[in-house]
Image (cartoon, rainbow, N blue to C red; front, top):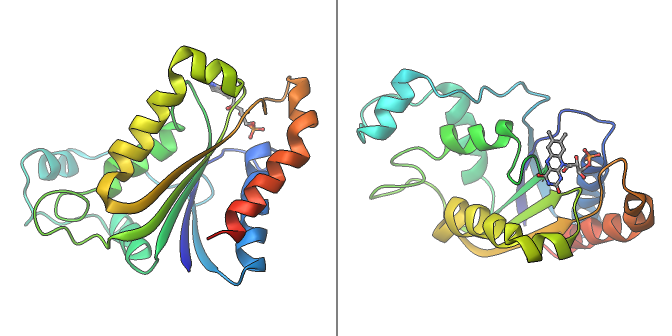
Length: 194
Ligand SMILES: Cc1cc2nc3c(=O)[nH]c(=O)nc-3n(C[C@H](O)[C@H](O)[C@H](O)COP(=O)(O)O)c2cc1C
């Protein structure tokens, strides 16, 4: 399978970067190919311009889509699957990734009639988080992430959707070291199983 990875973390000195590297090793070991958008690395613009807003809000398909957005859309349509890898910031993806959705999911591409976006086979969300799964279940935050990422952002654009939370991975948590090997193996296996 050809996989498009959308990755967002501001620092290479992070567990999320390690998880991304393990996932890629898994993909490669199973013979899959990939393209990656490292949103911080490429300094992807995440603020929507007024022209973009007017295009989306008024469904103006005739208004042009910015070149950097078209490039992301082309990467999607050249792949069979999409993977989002990010740290949880205030119970959501970093603004860098939320802004990617704001700009790349355009009218006529990701929504509206006659969508140009390819119907992808698989979508995986790998989210590194400081809190524990137990906490996410108890507070309803797990269900909120599932709803927003899988049911709203991916929705019927992707056939099979999955969420993998690598929990207890904040720097100050003793769980980070305890679970490190297990979590990196889970990321690797997720890559293999594409
Ligand atoms: C600004 C900020 C907000 C965060 N918000 C949350 C949060 O809402 N829930 C959570 O579980 N962890 C949160 N964390 C912890 C991160 O998800 C943490 O970065 C993650 O465990 C991955 O570690 P890494 O940054 O080394 O990749 C936050 C971290 C930062 C810097």
